[in-house]
Length: 275
Image 1 (cartoon, rainbow, N blue to C red):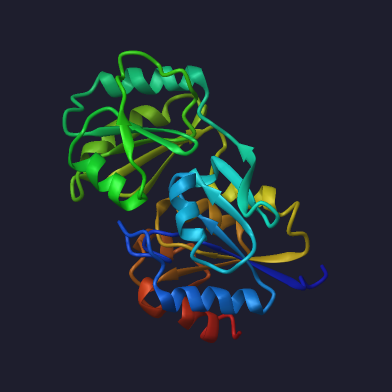
Image 2: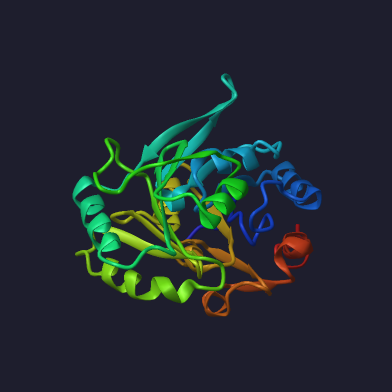
């Protein structure tokens, strides 16, 4: 097998590149990614965040590359002429699955849970409260209340069910029920209190598989810290997790770097990737 001559680096956002509930990439991480890009490495954001929220972060970088949002529900590329991202792949949850997800969610005592729906750049939730306020702040996108008595007139790119931080166990039984839906959806956790539902076969890993058709002969390097990064780590040639990442995920990572947001990426670039 010939040696790959090019590198593409994929970065999760929350807990890896930025502080959770933040919208700003720390300046030292901006400089590290721009340094990598100056060395000919393409930079790709790979996040569970909605497209608009991820785009707010990507605009802070003076880099080129694609962007994966909604855990792979949308794959986009930068148009240097219009200065905007063009969506090249969109994989929403299908209507039949949405109806089943609504049915299962409404069969539970969901008073302390919040369901979020996403129509590309638009955010909706079933109730106003702590979870909706936290999500609006972290995504820097204002949402609207929507009733769950009827299916909306759009297909949601991703469905997020949120518990309060520290109460992720309230999602455990709901997760087990959703996983039984005949593989018509993809269920993952970005955080213990965030249950994320995507369309069939939608994942960061499958987004990387698609991008291999674009970044041919490129070595894929993935940086992530949590459960929804597993498929990305499995598809990447090299995977790097910060020391404060989830312990279960460390077992499948190629390397562990220092604490993620506080210089872990720079440490990995200098001491692991030797750039």
